[in-house]
Image 1 (cartoon, helix red, strand yellow):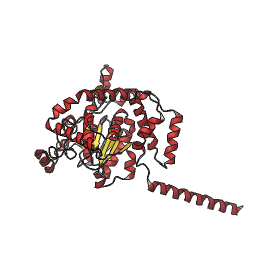
Image 2: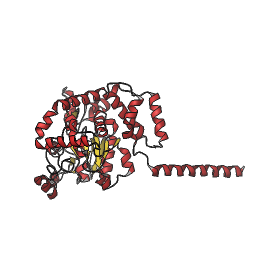
Image 3: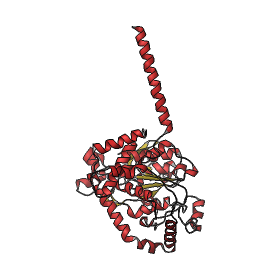
Image 4: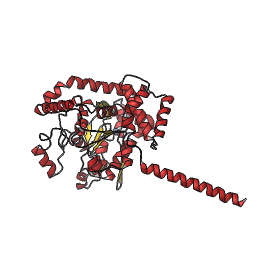
Length: 404
Ligand SMILES: [Zn+2]
């Protein structure tokens, strides 16, 4: 952590608590403003997929009809952050955005730093008292807590966000007064939260790379001119995309822990039930949410308890070896395949109240963890290189035996 080179950003609390957590609509352009004031997508669209603003009263997760795989993937990703996020792939109007926003009431509690630099007591444990800022060092010496327990947040990344807004950059307001300082970006604000990116396939590559790197490392460093700062960024990344609107690079696809194909409901009875619920919700949001409140609360408590229990769940070598064999049979090269698959199975086992991963656990989460992992390009490339190496070896052998 780097504390010396910039001043604490006194403005950050405002943006963090309001603009990015979905309490207020994002209005960044005239188009956004028009969308907001005309309520486009809110009343006019049953699925709420296009609403473009966060609903302060999200549709209850429990009330979503069908879509079992999507619901399972999202729940497991809240239980085990090591799963590495979820990518929802499907056409418009299948409820992807609604489902992600509905997670708001299920989010677990996390321990968060009270300090703008994000100092944590474990920094002191691992690197000594100099690893935290002077204020926190003082607090620690006085026996005061550096952290507070609060509910994890849901942060939405606006599609038109700039790289500076995402990773952080110069604080322009301070610059007017001839002072140079950095402002935290969305990534830092999303620490220990769920970061949702709708239409991730339409984001510029540089932003997607920054997101995925920060998510994988759990921290990131911003350098702007003479200033630099390192921030924690341990967030669960959830992306959604409509494949009709453009592809995602295969290497990005691979970096999401789970990939769920979301389709419209096929059963007429389910569709009718979904329609009735949306109708009821639009009529009186508060009343509808209240109806599902007891179940929502139980689910939230279960997610929290399962999360706390997760460290007790293990996977034996015998089971893990079977899994790895399957991955090799499928010719999946990426090591992320087994990491995600096993971590997801651990969460699944924990959710079922067990402490040992079984083959059935692996089976239950295999599709979401392993699909869309294989890259034909990589496979072809590796085979060509193997052939090339073989040719090299045999040519070398021939040359060397000639010499003798
Ligand atoms: Zn501090």
